[in-house]
Amino acid sequence: MTLMTQEKLAERAGFSARYVGAIERGDVSASVTVLGQIAEASGVEPGYLLKKAAGLSKS
Image 1: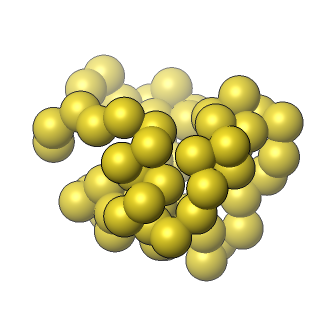
Image 2: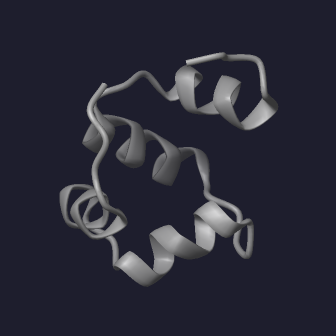
């Protein structure tokens, strides 16, 4: 997985960079649908994002 800016991720997922930042900070909760869009835009499976959020993945 390659790193990308919030702006690029937001563009690929169809959201504003402000919204993606709010999700990352925990200011808002993402729905399952939003999680799926972010995962697709990131090139990962949705479960990977959940593992990262729960601290279960080391990469």
